Length: 339
Image 1 (tube, rainbow, N blue to C red):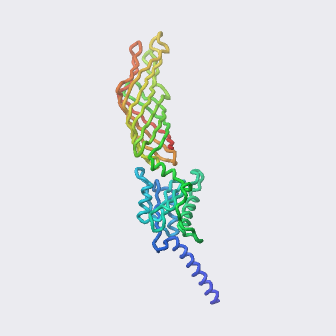
Image 2: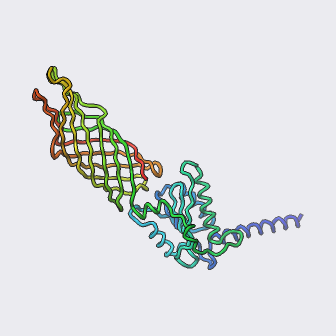
Image 3: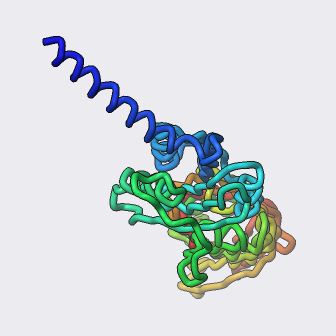
């Protein structure tokens, strides 16, 4: 009985020693210093980054978390992290990771690799394990000997889509929306629908093109007169907006807009079905809030207002007018897709 207990105790001690040895190999380099990994993520609550963080800490790595600011260069951030003593850096973006590994004792990048799964596959947990395993083996921490790291051929390096967007600062977005348009003139509130095209020029600046059409016209009636009026708008402006990686972002724009007021109706038996239209020009500004639901899709709410430099006025033979007011405002909501 004593021999059996002694043998069991020996097995437990050996297994514990092996487990501690494997953990120590993951936690320290050949010089006995703890291995540090910097983990960058677009948002602080990114599930993929959280899973990678937990897996790395379970292996004994020292993990430092950092958020990616849209106005900063990610490649420069990674370089600074490696120069400060980190052995590796990982950029996590929902369904994609970009791994940077430095040579031991140097800030020079020895290996860079992108790992990705389909956004709707639900395999983000598998991606986290693959990323951690790739890090562990590439650093020579696997159970079997691993060849020393060497710079891979240029054709093997896969550039991250996230880093390409961050480096260039260029992006393209299309949105559709609908809402209510009102002015201080005689015309009442109108229901409109529109579409916008926005493009980032670099940094926080961009341009936008927008157009809006009426979903219903306003009825102007006075006795026997029946006049139906609609408003069409198109504009262009300068945009101030962050890139699309933030979960919640604000935008602002300032530009010029052209209005076309179109009226059709009857003001007398001789003018049944007559159509007339007026042209106006205005300055506009808008602010928007955008909530990112996925890497390319967002919900947005826009508030727009402005003042007419030239008011469109339609005058009928009986003296009635369809006027667009000097000031106008609109509230719209819709969806946006970014490339």
